[in-house]
Image (tube, rainbow, N blue to C red):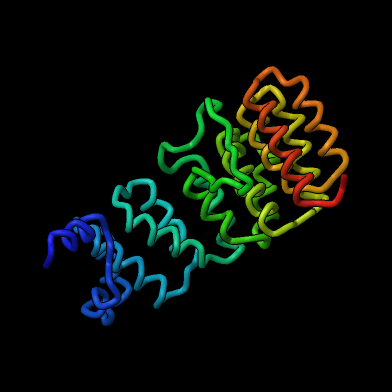
Length: 241
C-alpha cells in the first residue's frame, strides 16, 4: 500500500472495496467496530450501519456523540453524510448538539467582512449538516430561536439563513421568528450580526428598513458592513426595489 493510501486510511478515508470484508457483520459487530482505534474501520462501521439499518434516534444520538470525540477528518465527513440522511423527526435529536461539537464556532465578531455573494457554510458541524437537510427541518430549527440556549441560537441562525437563501423560502413565520429573536438578543453582537446576514434571503420591506437602520447606526463596523452587504444581495436577487 502506498504511503499516501496509508495516510488517507489514518485519517479515516475508505474505498468502496474496503467495506467488502465487513458486509456480513451483524449490527452488534458493527457497533463494536465503531470503537476501533483505526479510523478507517470506524468509517466503515458508520457507512455499513447507515446503509443496512434504520437511522433511528438511538443511532442519531450515537453518531452525534461520536462527533463530539472524533478527530479524523474522513470519519467526521462520513458521520455528517450519514446524518444528512436523517428524517425530520431525527432533526429533533440533532438540534440538541448545536454549538457543542468542535471549536470552530464564532466566539466573537470577525475582523474581516464576508465579501462573496454566496451564503457561507455554517461553521458549527451540526448546523452545517442541518442546513443541508433543507426546508423540511425549518420548523424544528425555528423552535431553537424561542429557547434561552444562546449557544444553540447562534448556530441555528446559520442553518436557517442558509436554507432560506438557497431555497428562496420566504416563509413569513420563519422571518417573524428571526425578527423576534433579533429584538430579544439585540445586545448580543454575534446574534445580531448573524441575523443581519440571514435577512439577505428575504425580499421584505421591513427587513430592508431594519438593514438600512443598522447600516447607518449600529455600533459595530462589521455589522454595519454586513447590513450593507445584505442590502446589496437583496437588491441583486429580487425586484423589490
